[in-house]
Image 1: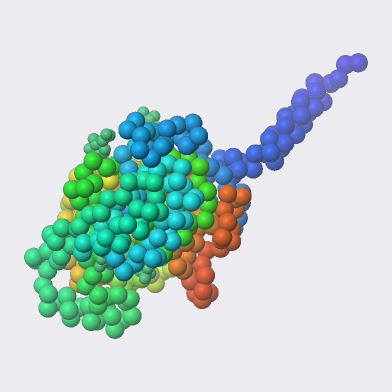
Image 2: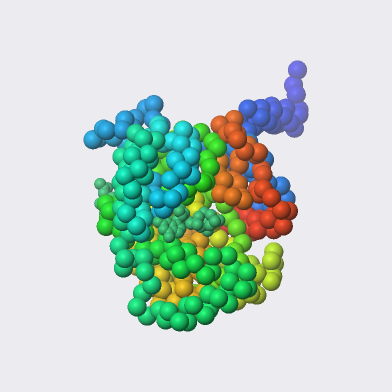
Length: 396
Ligand SMILES: Nc1nc2c(ncn2[C@@H]2O[C@H](COP(=O)(O)OP(=O)(O)OP(=O)(O)O)[C@@H](O)[C@H]2O)c(=O)[nH]1
Ligand SMILES: *[C@@H]1O[C@H](CO)[C@@H](O)[C@H](O)[C@H]1NC(C)=O
Ligand SMILES: *[C@@H]1O[C@H](CO)[C@@H](O)[C@H](O)[C@H]1NC(C)=O
Ligand SMILES: [Mg+2]
């Protein structure tokens, strides 16, 4: 019996449709990751509620490669876990190290590098090395990387910090906090001990990790040409950075050639989600990658564009006269000078630094609630800048 051509086509189409549906139902993770692009209507629902798997592409696994701790020819690349930390934070650091070793590093045995403006104690060295099979390095931060540069006016710092503190800016009157922010902005990658290292994963004491990660995260960065990976995207306190954006604009006017073609400008200058923030920060949305977590390629920071930008900011003095954080500084630089495709959201890395989370929906995770962004007072919900990031840059 002859079947009319349109009916035959319809039949074929239906079968194809069923196949597609079956494929998507049986591959929920991939389906979601394939949608990893812009959320044009903003974030109507937290993407972390959807099933999250591993990123696409070839992933290096500990079962298939040599990641044994002492191997000379291991599959490890040029990378280290990196922590600026004080001796007094030892116990908090150990808990964090145990988290990261359990979920990831006991499989890959990457080295740890600890940095401090004061010498580490023997107890610190003994107890940290006991947590990992990876090699631990203990480094002193040179004074010239830590202390205020000579052009900073001490009297002016005191006065302006007093005013910031009165305006409610946390840590504004702690000189160590300002130094730490400047060091994380423009100094860490200049430490001689890191001269032969390209990638770093920044780790702070007290942060938590919740999900098993079964691939070499550093290799992932290298293989996919990623410059920077983040977990959490936030608004900043505009009072801590009133002149950061104006200085940035001045720098850009001198160096328009540094602006990347596929940059993240819209995310940096949005004035719709929190107009007051943009106004008080003089044109900057204050949105940033929360830098207590970062996995990065130090070649970016060591490159001409970032170096010139940091030097410009350093001369302007806002690390001390205001309270510029390394988070907005890194974020603005990446947003202006780097191609947006080179920044990666590590949605699969369950992470917490009080009071915020990145907690994916995955059987690999335990100890956090999928899609929970904050813990504590409800005003914290407003600090979430992911809606803008996903809208203007994407969910990749
Ligand atoms: N060695 C050393 N490490 C420091 C100093 N100040 C801060 N750090 C480290 O720098 C990182 C960031 O400091 P935090 O005090 O956690 O700053 P924060 O995350 O903005 O503040 P919290 O919300 O209180 O955690 C942590 O890893 C600290 O251990 C310092 O003066 N010396
Ligand atoms: C490691 O990275 C640094 C900085 O990018 C580079 O100078 C060095 O050649 C690299 N070493 C190896 C073995 O790849
Ligand atoms: C990464 O960059 C190299 C060199 O530019 C290129 O050959 C390679 O295809 C890129 N890989 C990916 C995954 O984009
Ligand atoms: Mg902290």
